Length: 100
Image: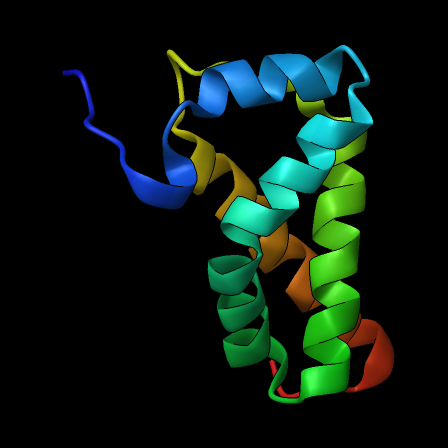
C-alpha cells in the first residue's frame, strides 16, 4: 500500500538520503519542516517546554546519527521521526523527572 505524503513529510526519502550523505543543509531542512510536530509530541510526553526542547534536540541528533538506517519502503518519515521523538522524550522524562 503506497502512502500519500504532503507538507512537512513530503519527499522524506530524498531528504533522509541527503542526511545520510552528511548534508548539513538537509538536516536543517528536516528540522525546519518537521520540528513543530516533533516538539508538540515531546511536550505532550514531558509536560514542560524546557524538557520538550531537550527531547526535540535529542530527536534530531539521533535522526542525524541514524539517517542511514531510514528505509522509506518500510516506514514513513513521520512514523520514523516521531518514534525517535517519543523515545527521546521518554528518556528525558525519566532522567529529568518529567511527567511521563
